[in-house]
Amino acid sequence: MDLAGLSGYLPAVERRLARSYAEAAPSAPAPVRPYVARNREFTLRGGKRFRALLVLGGYHIATGRRPDPVVPAAAAVEHFQSWMLIHDDIIDHAETRRGGPTIHRAVARAEARGRPTPATDEFGVGVGITLGDLEEPFTLAALLAVRAPPAARLAALAELVRMCRLTAYGQLLDLRNGRLDPARVTEQDVLDVHRLKSAIYTVAAPLRIGALLAEGSAPLVRDLEEIATDIGIAFQLRDDVLGAGFDANAIGKSANDLVEGKRTLLVVDTWRRGSPGERAAVARVLGRPSSSEAAVDRAREAIRSSGALAASERKIAELTRRARRRLARSRAIPGRAKPLLDEVADRLTRRSK
Image 1 (spheres, rainbow, N blue to C red):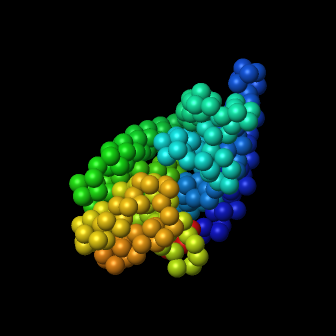
Image 2 (cartoon, helix red, strand yellow):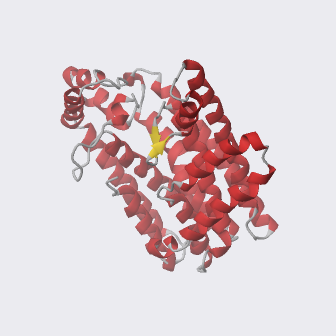
Image 3 (cartoon, rainbow, N blue to C red):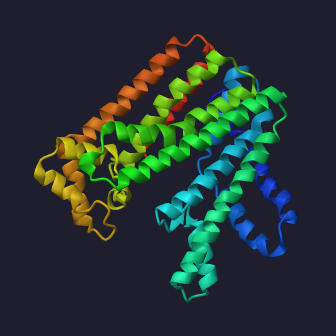
């Protein structure tokens, strides 16, 4: 089964997500229900649902069977995604997500009724944090709804605990890096964030959850972890390249990561490789949302001329090659499943959006 085949199960995942909110609504106090409805709307806006696909894929890799039994677990990782995005948007002061307002901004606007104040903004943040927290029980309930042997469900639950912990560690490291002068952030600092914050919960943990619910062998689960971690780090490095506006297929691509001040490998490498002028060009826009388009263009050109962009592309290629070598050597991953993982690597590291 390939990714297109797994995508055929996504309507069932969407139904499961909608059902989870419908089942929870009656037990919520009446004044709270409109807030809970915001979570429902936010989650059901969609997204790529790639984490859900990988849960389904992990089960199929381990069994060779249809992944119907783990549809609730696929929904669980999408609840987790909403949980993380709601909190990330507050941390990043983001205004939009998935084509609509972020949760905290939507709540603040509704409370303000056309007259925003610091108090209504603070209220929106408080409700947003709480609504992000509310996705935790939805995540757990969906995972526990899987019909699997108790030992398999416990193993998947332990993986969820690990995923939550490591993702939080990655977020803390990311916040810490953002407070440092770029010259003090190392390549390893960046890669550690990408491994913990992105690779685990985007690729490795979803695959492992699916395989664990299928009672996959320890060597299989271990090999999935190693391969998926390399792919996941490469995925985030690709995201950083796109987030800085380097996309040959798109005109006028934004450079949000630069003006938001993110310490990506592109930025860190510019400080390490670049001339004083190239570093200065990036410094003028780093963490400055009001930067002009011309200044951002000069920063991008400095990243390119310093060799930092080429270095990121080499790292993406190196990680992807290593993942594919590990996949080819693995004796635990069935041969029938290897094309699917190869397709996952291609989709995540070669994308243009």
